[in-house]
Image 1 (cartoon, rainbow, N blue to C red):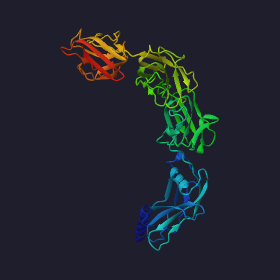
Image 2: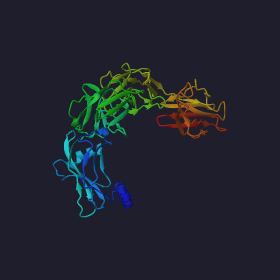
Image 3: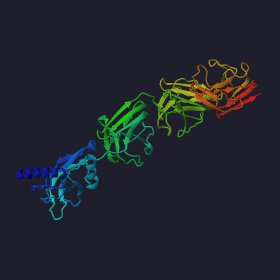
Length: 485
């Protein structure tokens, strides 16, 4: 009976020791270490994955009832662990894992192994017996080999005549890294006709690493370290909206043309326009939020000539919108696109007779242009045209100032009015509205609204306001006056 009780106690004690390792009943077997892969080439695609591990057997406390903690040492072969990385792992730990990025960083930056070069390493594990005077256990040295990779750039930029910022390397267009695959970069936006390549930074020396086109496959890239190698570039034949997806590990590129206009910006250039011949800082057209193919520009055009650029910077940096004929008058309804300085350098011409304020509308979808003189119309039952938006009488133009002289309130002494820049249909253009609803005609503050977007504020005549008035509007100075005659 007593023998049976002792056996049960011994078994219970043994099970308890295996779980907590506070006490080890050991037979004296030496600790042994093994590795998951004795020859491993690391890959950045597995950067966050556990790709390499050591494991070892339990150590012995030589029957002293002392706990054991474990430490792992790893060094290049032949160093005799003089430059070892040491990991103190504590009690009850029999494995050490590494992900690819962690291990690769050690190889490159701690031991100085060159990317792509295979180096031999050694490792051992020590079972440290906590009780003093008891011999620690040390495994035999394990030999294995590792090959690191060169991490790809964390940044990528696009430079070239096809890109938004041209060859300005200091202002190169950035691509966006993928959050889960940081070696994949994307760009979505406008591209011009021209060529481009990829840089890893914006250094002005042009001596950084570049990715250029593979000579045999447009969908593949070549990594040119320090700007070396053939400077082959991808070419955009047709400008427009594009999505680029670049994989630096696969050395691949995918280009997709998206729906949208060929150009994302338009500018007016020429001595007939407020921009003059300043290509570095010309005045921009406004792109329609409702229809991105439509661009508009409104300003005074004086005697001289002008053309339209799709870029700002230098004369040969991009494409131009030119009239189809030289010295084209402002009645033209079509255009041609020319590349850089290749011509023909046709321009629209404004004369003494045709000068004035114009609204230029370019539609990139149907390749059309309208250059229309801006006219103003008083609309409302307080004015001369009533609510007739279809065929109202325009204000007259005197030295560039829009002028109305006539009766207000003739049909309705307490009527209201606003001013349109168009005729035809209610939502077809821009309005000059009072700054506030039911605004007195003594208050000449105004706002500009588009179409039917509102607010639809109007000037409202009060009792006794009806009479003869002179209304003048200087659109250049944004000044409106209403004077009773």
